[in-house]
Length: 457
Image (tube, rainbow, N blue to C red; front, side, top):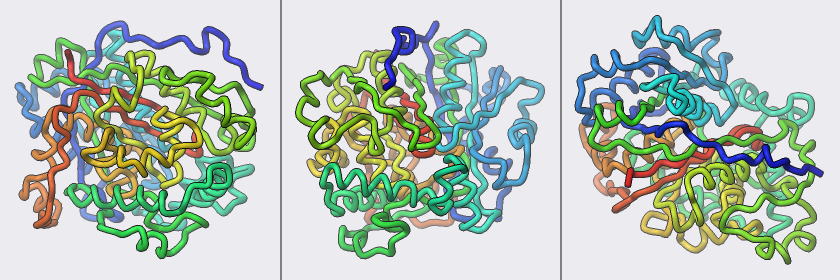
C-alpha cells in the first residue's frame, strides 16, 4: 500500500508568471519524403514567428531567445543520435544552450514543462519548445515495436510488441468492471475523426458511423483500427515567455497558469493499491459504494495514477474547483478510445466507473459543456510523438486567442498542404473560451503532464 507524505503532495508554484504567445505546426502525414526533419521544424517555427500576429519581426524573436527545449520520442526512427543538436543548429540558435526531453508519449508535454520551469525560475525569458517525430523511415511493424519498447520490455513486450495489445487488455478489464458498451468507445472515434475534417493539418480525418467503427477491422480485441492513434511525421512549436517578453511580443498573451507531472511504474503489473487521491470536486462519499463492490482497489489495472497525480497538482496550482465547470476546452491524449474514457475519470470529469457519461451525455462535443479534442486529437489528426503534447497546447492557444478560423479555415492554408478545403468545412471556434486543459500521456500511464492555459484576467 502506498501512502503519501506531506512533501509528496506539495503544490508547485511559479516564482514568476509564465505565458505562451505563439504556436506553429506542420501538417501531419504517414510519410513525408519531401522534407527532412530539420525542414519540418523550420516550417513549424516559421509559422510561430511569422503567422501569429506578433508585434515584432522574426529576427527580434530570434534575438530574444535565451534557452531552447527539444522534444523527440525516439532516436530510433531517424537513426540520428543528438538529433536536437542538429535541429538547434539548423534553426540558427547556436550557441545558445538547450536540452532534449524524452518521456515517451508525454515527451511534448514534458518539454513544455521544462520550458515553463526555466521561465518561472528566471533562468530564461524566451524559450521555444520544438518537437517532432520521424516515423516514416521504418516499416509500420518496426515502428510499432519501437514505440512498444517504451513499456517494460521484460514483461509487456511478451504481449506482441504493440501498444494496442497493451490497451486492449485494459479495455477488457475496464469493460468487465464497468460494463461499457462498445458503442460508447466508438462514439469517441467518430467524434475525433470528424473534428479532424476541419483541420488542414490532419492525417486521418473521416466521417464515420458507430456501425463503421464496430465493423472495422480489429487490431487487438476489442480495439479496431479506427479507435487507435495514427503514426505520424511532423513537427510543432510553442513559444514560452515571461510576462514582459509576452506583452512585448503580442497583445494576446495566454497564461500558462499550471503545468504539472505525474508518473507510475513502467511495468503495469507492479502498480500497488493505495487510498484514492481525491480531486477538489470529490469527497470520500463519492466512492463509498463503488470501491469494494464493483472494484476492489485503486488505481488497479484500469486507472492512471500518473494522470490523477498530474491533475491533482495542476488543479490546486491553478485554483480549479471543478474541471467540468472551470474549463472551456480540453485536449486529451486519445491514443486509444479506451484510454480516453479512463482519462475522463482520472481528471475528474466523472467519478470512477462513470466515464462513459461524459461522452454519452454530449458534454465532450462541440457546443457541449466541455468540448474535447476539437483538434481531431491523436486518432483523427496526429501522433508524431515528440510533437503531440506541443500540438495540443498550440491548438488550445489558438482557441483561447479566437484564432481557430485563421489557422484552420483559410483555403490557402489547405492548399499549402496539397489539400482542398472541404465544401462543408465548419468552424469549431469555441465562443468566449477562457480556460483550457491538455493531458499529455506516455506508455500505459508511466508519465503524464496536465497543463492549464487561461486568458489573463
